[in-house]
Amino acid sequence: MGEGNKRMKVLDLFAGAGGFSLGFKLVGFEIVAAIENFKPKAKTYSHNFPGVKVIAQDIKVISPDEIGDVDVIIGGPPCEPFTAINPRRKENPKDRLYRDPIGRLVLEFVRFVERLKPKVFVMENVPQIMELEKYLRKEFDKAGYDIYFNVLNALDYGAPQVRRRVFISNLELKPKKIKGPRKVWDALKNIPIDAPNHDFWSPPSKIARRIPRLRWGEGAQRFGRFQNWIRLHPYKPAPTVRGNSRFVHPFEDRPLTVREQARLMGFPDDFVFLGGRNVQFDSVGEAVPPPLAKAIANFIFDVLSKERI
Image 1 (cartoon, rainbow, N blue to C red):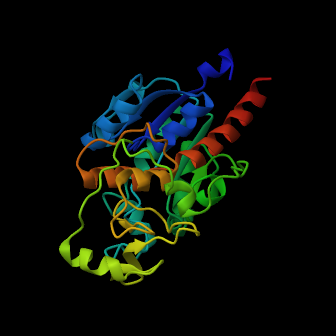
Image 2: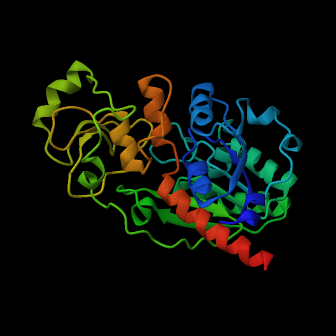
């Protein structure tokens, strides 16, 4: 992308395993720092981004001045306070932002934006966070920015799953759609047997007994409207991959491996997930799909490049 692009610096907040960062790295941005409080995920991030300063601390105790100048801030604060599938979600949307201690982490993202004044910021979350629109507008306005609520579906950007997420930004994001895999089997076929994180494993016995009877699209468990242990339909997109999702192989009577789940998110096979199996699944499902992240990064690169002319 040229020498000038090396000066386009990115800070990743709530970085997780690094799906969002990977998209920006692939476009040529320089990731200067990442903040991730959960140490097993921070180790995964460090493993895959060896040149990046990873701060494995609570974001509330970190001063933005430690980071220095950046052009772009990205990140995905935890979505649990806002998602409709959380049975303990606070009834009043205002309380989800100001009274829920996890919801308040969104305000930490705003704090970094206000202090570092990036040219662009992008905050990813579930669409239900838009129920807090007036409060979010007020907070970002105090930081000096107008915001757009950009709803994008990963299925349109190279990840074969139905995954609608909102990307709150000071830009109206219009990334180019990607002709990528749109069916589960496009992603799952041809995985090398020695690929990392591709270990077969046994589910709980209660689930294992139900798996052989599952048809495509059926789940072995149901919690309200949320199904788990769904046997994937090979010729359709997958449902949304979540940290607590477990899918069943379309043709074999077994759960997906972490690598297969990562394929549904668009992670390359050389991206390694560390920690125990549940941590690995969380790291996959809570990420921004790298192909979507790359499409967003390309759009932002074009905007910033035009500013420099």
